[in-house]
Length: 330
Image (tube, rainbow, N blue to C red; front, side, top):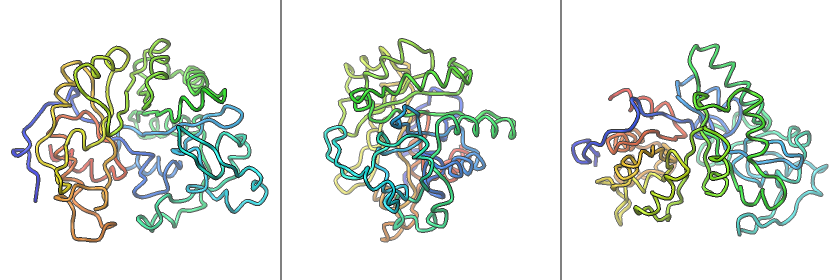
């Protein structure tokens, strides 16, 4: 089944041209959160890069989605770091492994990155071991250089991960973040930098000290009624819902008509950036899959078209080239 604009209706976004945001870089093509993944996305023409930030033992912000390192680096093959393996509870979930917070940035920079989903994206494994874990400072320098070289600004959506956990261990993320952005001259509303988190307390702190745009990310089960949106509007400039909160799925996993979320957010002046659009069948609605193989590419462009028709202001995606192609159709 093809989802058409006519079937979904059309809602206008708040921006002239909705943004295509590379999720952890072009992570459908390179191991996530590597400089190569970011540069690949920029070459494809993305508007923004999405980064997840966590802190090392000495308070340096680095780009990792998870605090635990064994899935996306070679730390398990490092006998000199074996003593750091332990059990840690992060946001109520017990994990066993090696954690960013236990390594200094110097130790972390000796690790090599690897593909998170080698079974789903075997082509990405060709780049395993080619790069290390980048710091926020390194990413900012790369983005500045690429923006200057290409004659167009590339924006950043910076997500602060496990903020409450970091507060509890004495490594608050907002302190080194704002220090680095200020040092780089990026703490102003025109800097093409957006701050995001699933946790409201750190966003409220940031809203009190910066004029950078703030996006409240939403968990799939979050309450999205008028009162919840009014509360978010007190400190944030936008929301970041899951795609299924904009395009609900039926009992068979298919999408049809959009929810009222985008319209309700726009009425409050809140932008809407949806996460995370991925190209493989396993991540797509059932009516946009091609064939039965879970890791084959489906009709991701169809999902992007449906989201754009629903009026979203940005699409966060692992496959930015397909999202850009869908956007160009409009």
